[in-house]
Length: 153
Image 1 (cartoon, helix red, strand yellow):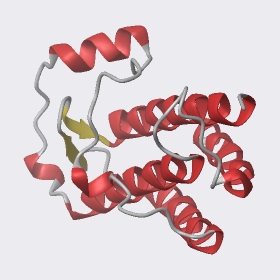
Image 2: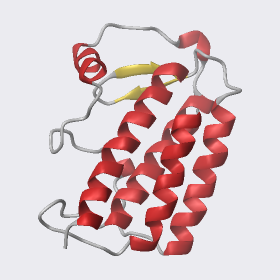
Image 3: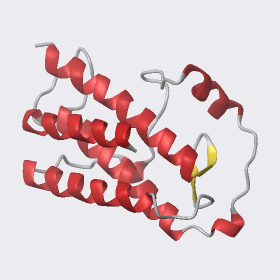
Image 4: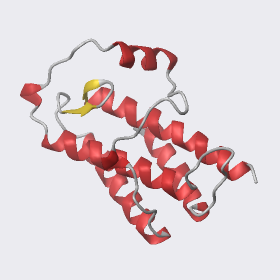
């Protein structure tokens, strides 16, 4: 979890740049990427909390295995579900509030049953351990995009 909190700290430092856009890197602003990350984290944790651990079933998934093997999300290959696509980027205060909720949710994940799960649209059922892996991977993916946006004019 330490690594995940480090990612959240990096994300928090980028909120000040939330209006910055670089069309050569992404059509979306830094704020959009931050909000997307936070919607993903908070949405996953909500699903984990609402899941029934007794219903968790592991299934082989080739896409998940491939991404786990390369430990990277290729840029431009996936499409975020509508539920985690920000409609309109919120203010600095809104992003901070969502970030604080994400911190609380990440802390609460540690106390959940290891078989709590959420259903990922490409990877299928992800238990707590795999959910943490995915959240870190996804957050790092967008942090790299945010870094590229902020470095380039």
